[in-house]
Image (cartoon, rainbow, N blue to C red; front, side):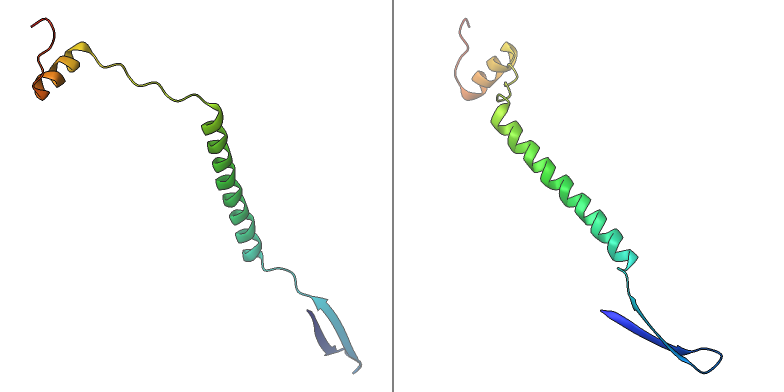
Length: 82
């Protein structure tokens, strides 16, 4: 991947220089940002799986007696005590 550059100096001598081209700066930025995004997503997934295994399931909200009575009446079952 070495490029050769040749030019002449003021006395007519031919000078040959070989130089390596570096990575494109845009590509470096893209690789760094892409790597960070990928690391973020993998980390979030790992934390999610860890939380699923270790945390207890969430408790359901208690239903008020008024709502239970209303639901029973909708279903046609009379509430006790009526």
